[in-house]
Amino acid sequence: MGVMPTTPPSPASAASADPRNESIAALSTFGSIRRLYPFVRPAMPRLIGGLLSALGASLAALAIPQALKWVVNGPLAAGAQERDWRGLAVAVAIVLVLGLAEAGLILLRRTLVMFPGTQVEADMRMALFRHLQNLPIAFHDRWPGGQLLSRIMGDLGLLRRWLIFGVLQLVVSATTIVVGIAILVATAGWLGLVYLAGAIPVVVIVFRFSRKYRLISRQSQDQSGDLATTVEESVHGIRVLKAFGRGRDALASFTDQADELRRTEMKKASVDAGLMTSLTLIPELTIAACVVLGTILAADGQIDLGDLVMFFATTAVINGPVVDLGMTLSMTLNARTAVDRYFEVIDTPNTVADPAEPVRVPIPAGEVSLRDVTFRYEDAERPVLEHVDLDLPAGTTTALVGLTGSGKSTLAMLVPRLFDVTGGQVLLDGADVRDLTRDQVRTTVAVAFEDPTLFSASVRDNVLLGVSDDLPAAEREARLHEAIDVAQAQFVADLPLGVETRIGEEGLSLSGGQRQRLALARAVAARPPVLVLDDPLSALDVTTEEAVTARLRDVLRTTTSLIIAHRPSTVALADRVAVLRDGRITAVGTHSELLARDPHYRHIISSLEEDYASHVHAAALDTETEPEEQSL
Image 1 (cartoon, rainbow, N blue to C red):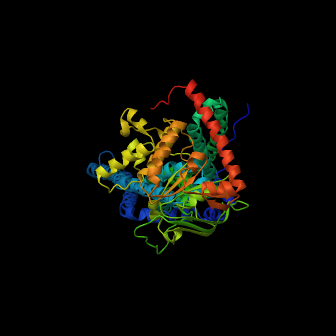
Image 2 (image 1 turned 30 degrees about the vertical axis):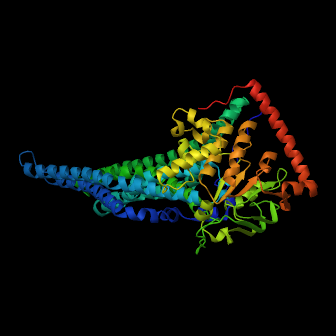
């Protein structure tokens, strides 16, 4: 058995192919991080307060060596009989106060930054989810779900940790190092200059590290998103994997990607470890050199004992931030990558947007017209639809028929403006749908897809998804039960909690026919002026189909309906039929008229009848050999 194909490279992984992503990559780390300001601005007072508290704690730590210098040169310098015990007590009190102040300021910093950090994360997550909801279907067709999930969860969690710890620690560490070295140079002379010289190789190493680590960090986070996509696809397709015995192949594919991510993480850890080693070793070697030089200077009387104690106590305070600098720098570069990945999605323009000055249709009648409509998918070589003209008079039912690949489902998605036409117009009550708000279009037009999607919520919530929450409870309840009756979804009464039963993710705990009936009930419950049905009965058995068809006739009597037909019984629901061939409408008329004058229509109907006969035969076999459909 062959190994299952791995997840294809995501748009995020191919940054070089997208000029917009190239411009993001060209930004400096500061330029990338600066893009967070609109989200961080409301939290700035508390974050600045946290930063000042952290700086205060750092300065308190740097003040302790100065107190030690005074103790050594003052109370401890005298002989045993003349020792200044009072001065020693004052020095101890000063050190204690400084230590308590440092601890208190650290506690204050944590208190100040924790809430705004989580609020910024929540605001950014809401903004990204809102934008994802706003983006057109074409975007979601291109982007793997795992990549989006890793950005909205993992990347934003990383940014929160950086905001409440990394950025403050980075500023505090840099300030502590600069102020500490300035004190050493000003008070310890040659010793301070030697310690300063040791900072030069550290700066060079940090610069090289940042360039290398940033690339590995981006690779790691993109691979994490691809791995999340593989998990998502495997979980959603678990029934198929089990049915075909492909679990081992799925595991092999997952293992390859997981190993690749592990190797990248090991490479990242190796680079990080190299930096940490340098940031630990170079200051220690510098201090060792200072010990030798300090001993010589003290022996020659060029530096007193207090200054020597102050010098080494100060270097002890500085060394901690120097080592921390490696960790906070790594976190900052990871945060920069997270910001870039976040804004790759946020910066994606919405090509199906509301107009600046929308037209209002007060009481929609439901008249739909397609005028010279052409549609081409992005990067496709040729249009799916070309110069389509079709009228759907208010209150009529039109069946759209055509061979597989003729463009029926694509045409159906243009009516609710899930895609925008490439050329021509889709008119709703005489107004171009692009001149209406999307809410108005999608309140007027409801869709039931052939492949039904249900949410992990109750049956009630799924069916009433398109019904306004502002309606009285009695009206909502009436619509619920009417829709269930029309869709012949009475099986919900046998579920453990009836309509309150929570169905599993994507409704996979239900049979295909049950999911399709609930999706149809959802479209019916919305009571839209325009109803688009994309072969909504394909998964139903013959008896249920007949019952649904009979009830649908009542619903469709006052509704403008476009039905994608794959069965003769569906065609029978329509007042008239439109024939779609190779992306063009070639004939419109009643079923009888088209049978009499259109050979291609007769060929289509013949094909539908053959498929229907096969379906009936399969259903009969299922009835003989299989028990009745089981619910949850």
